[in-house]
Amino acid sequence: MELNLQEYPADVVQAKQRYGIIGNSPALIEAVARAVQVAPIDLSVLVTGESGTGKEFFPKIIHGFSSRKHAKYIAVNCGAIPEGTIDSELFGHEKGAFTGAVATRKGYFEEADGGTLFLDEVAELPLTTQARLLRVLESGEFLKVGSSTVQRANVRIVAATNVDMAKAVADGKFREDLYYRLSTVTISVPPLRDRGADIPLLARKFAADFAERYTMPRISFDDEARAMLMTYRWPGNVRQLKNVTEQLALFYAGDTIGASVLAPHLPALSMSLAPLGGGAGVYSHDYDSEREMLLGMIVRLQRQVDSLAARLDGMSRQSSLPYTDSIEPSGSMAPGHGDEEMTRSIVKFQPFASPFSPRVGGSAVVAEDVIPQAAPATLEETERETIRRSLERNGGRRKATAAELNISERTLYRKIKEYGIE
Image 1 (tube, one colour):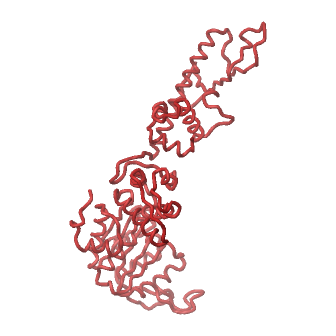
Image 2 (cartoon, helix red, strand yellow):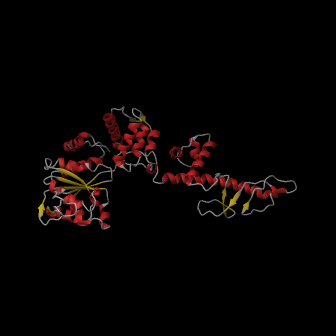
């Protein structure tokens, strides 16, 4: 349920406007409100959320609404600094402390004295650096690399991570005492898939920004494309949505984007579109669609195998020739040879481990005229051929084809697009 703007506290509205935060989902508003509320109080804050959700905005809100707003704000990506130099980057070093230390250098803690230090990807810190960080958080004291002089820094720490910290602690990759010290207050940033109607709002904003930046006609999205945007899982979250929107804005400038244009820009492995936060489910996956397709294919194969078995049974009653493990074709029937020279299709009887295998006379039947192939087909090839043949039999009518394959029309539509079936 979306909140009315008038229901928001004034400082939440101000934070959204100042930092360009788009969206009205309750989970997002709660995260912004929490950041504004904790800002004036000097507590350590841990921002959690998946990669690409926009965690970097929340330390800025905390700094901007705090008494430190006129001091320095420094953001550090802990995952981008090599392990051998991270201590020097954070705490500084003395001249000659190590090879290449040609001069004394201030670290981020010293530079940010009186301000806010944002430690992004904090879970990537080495254990030795974690011990140094814990000391700063507890006493405000630190040592430069190569120095024995204790220094003090009045710095507020805001950390962020996309890692499950409880698991990292359990695995011995992160200090438990540091985790509790960092997470005095926790802010959870929701993934994009749980933000419902925020998704088309963001896409529209990204499209408008791109058009303005490059002086190009602006794209828009039709209803079907908006529904697809809202039901896609967005594993890369807001960052992925921005990239996809900008690609579309570049190649389809001025156009109205439909589902058929949008779909190829969404990675196939993530088209696991189950009903998600705020949007009605248009697609279904999480292996559900693959399972549905496979079962539909098996039902189709079983029907054809049953038909083939009935034909073979009728032929066996008319002929005195007993079944063998392999009945080979022998060309045209010659006079005087009777049924032994009858031209027949190649039918092989062989074991089949699948629990779905229909059986005739105790053996599973695999007929080459069910799905013609020169070599063992992959599941994708089998699906493609099954769908193509069913469409031919039904004159291209998708509803009838879906009913025959025992799958939904949306799954059939997606598979037709995926396999490029005309």
